Length: 113
Length: 113
Image (tube, rainbow over all chains, first blue to last red; front, side, top):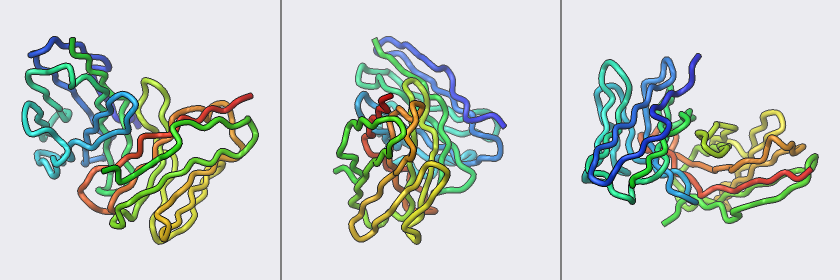
C-alpha cells in the first residue's frame, strides 16, 4: 500500500510565477490536509479537503493561495504570484477518519528566487 | 499564541538510556494527542497517539503519558537507539473535528553512542 505521494519534491520559482503542488492520498483515504513548515518552526495547518469539497481553509492565506481535491486525480495546492516569503516545505497528509491520525507525504520544498 | 509548546529545542541522550520528550498545551478542547518523528528532508512519521480518556499508551519502546490536569504530555523512548535521532513533534486535535493538527515546534533528539 503506497504512502502519501507528493510531487514535485523540489520546486524553484521566480517571484511572480505560479507554483502547483500535487498530493495523492493513501489508498482508501478520503481526507486530505495541507501544512506549511517554515525554517525552525513546526508545521502549520493550511486547509482540509474531502473529494470536491473544501471543509476548512482557516489556515490558508486569503490571497494567492487556493486548494482543490477533484473527483478524479490528486489534490492541488496552488500559489499564484509567489513571493520570497512563500519559500517553505509544504506537506500533505491524508487520513481514513477525520480528526485522528494523519499520514504525511515527503513534502515539496518550494524555493522562490 | 502557541497552543502546543515544546520548550526544549534539543535533547541529548546516551544510547541505551531513556529519552523523555515533553509537551504542554493550552487549549482544553484538545482531546487527542499525537507524536511524530521527522528526519531531514522527509515528511513526519506517525509514532503514537493517546486519547484524553487514557493517561498512558504504550507501543514497543514508545510510551506516551498524558496528564490532563496539568495539560502536559510526554513521550518516553526506552531504550534509546541511534536511529531515534530525529526531530520529534507533539501534535493535538479535537478528536473527530474538522480542524488540522496543531503542532509544537519540535525537539531535536540526539542519541549519543
